[in-house]
Length: 532
Ligand code: FAD
Ligand code: NAP
View 1 (spheres, rainbow, N blue to C red):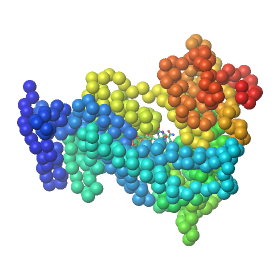
View 2 (view 1 turned 60 degrees about the horizontal axis):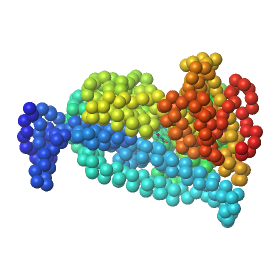
View 3 (view 1 turned 180 degrees about the vertical axis):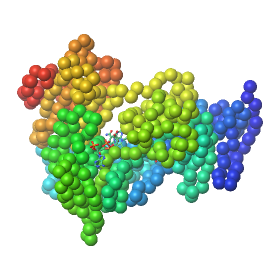
View 4 (view 1 turned 90 degrees about the horizontal axis):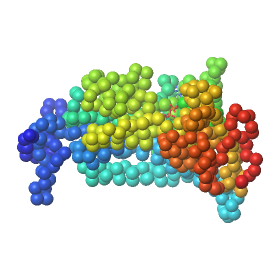
């Protein structure tokens, strides 16, 4: 039986170096006396919190909110270290502040610019559409206003749900104690039964002269004060393609510097179609090249020296250089050595099994996990399931396979499951059937938009039940298209099932229900008629 002792709710003790505000208390079962909630100490519970979450981003917040709903007492530490340029932001993590959300809004801004020209073809009277241009400052302000409103709603939500939010940079003191360094440098100690690492990552800079002084990353672009102008984007992953896509769509002269291949890890045929489409829209590509140095010229512009595959050095001048060369997990800063937390040497990430690290009471979700998709819904899902296992008697585990994703390149690319290369590597070419088709979206005809790169591909087993292993779609609203098919794949969709699905006409998603040409047949996958 637990012994109950009454204590004041916010008792604070000061030690020499730390502000110890963690007198043991439990809110798991608060007792109500009249209207006042009085905190009681369950002497069996040695820690202030049941769960302390390090990182108030997608995964951390999802876990914290779920845990608190299940009766746990939870605190979230979140702290944003400013970028070299000085950019910082509020609560909510990468997705909300410098990731998915501002990116999608800028992508939308670029698509709207395109739509203005299309509108003319549909009869809209727009005086001189060729003279339209983006007001970067207005766009940036609108995007940042939205971001700030989300920061605010997130804080209110945490308060309402009674999750304690602490704006501090946390690190491990011991297995149950976190030190939080506040803005003023003061350190607070917080104890918890369980600790969840959800600190995400931050963009890398290359180790070349001028990179940190003059370069920016995705952490800066969405709140950049002045219009980016002529931009060099280094890196051809998700972020490189997406940023270059919206900048080019807004009319900025944009170049992507590709070290090796486009969209490593993705189906390479699809990746190259995305790049071809971007090139036709005006994005310049410099292949097999790496930046060597950046200098600031007297006029304030940036002189970039870069090396091609033959070692030859070239130069060009840009207004902005944006590095999109991958991200580093923020695990070193946690002082993992203090608790014996193991990191994977090559990535600095955590190789957790069912989100459990090698330390029994320390868990991890989101971008800090080794070889797991760095995507917001993945972090959220894993965080929620973990909280349910810790506090809700659940046994449901996160399934990291068949996670759908979309690259918001101007013409989007959505996919779920295996790429053609992965399917062949796993099953052998003979056992795989690849169905494919080019298609013409109905809405592209009137404005005579380029249909050359609208393409779908279905990768399936050739025999047995003809289970579908991967689906790939390039076209408008690819994310919306692929989401439903991702659910079907989870339910073990087979090719016969797909073929027996009646499409919705006239949509682009219905193209998946119409594919019948196999790559093996060598038949022409381009559409024979315009709109049947
Ligand atoms: P984060 O959301 O990064 O949150 C971690 C938080 O912890 C941050 O606030 C950080 O400041 C804080 N923190 C770090 N260290 C400490 C510490 N020691 N103490 C306290 N706080 C700390 N994903 C998608 O699904 N779709 C997209 O369209 C998409 N677009 C993206 C676009 C860009 C430009 C970028 C950069 C990412 C994008 N992502 C997208 C990826 C997505 O943002 C991440 O996968 C997701 O945010 C990861 O969530 P997380 O909880 O692991 O970490
Ligand atoms: P990324 O996808 O890993 O791509 C990094 C790119 O930079 C690669 O093209 C890589 O080339 C190149 N590169 C690496 N080091 C380099 C160097 N020193 N010099 C020049 N080029 C270099 O990383 P990211 O684009 O930064 O994205 C990080 C993660 O965020 C992604 O994995 C993704 O999960 C998430 N994200 C998701 C979305 C979305 O869902 N739409 C959008 C954005 C980001 P190599 O191929 O040669 O290594």
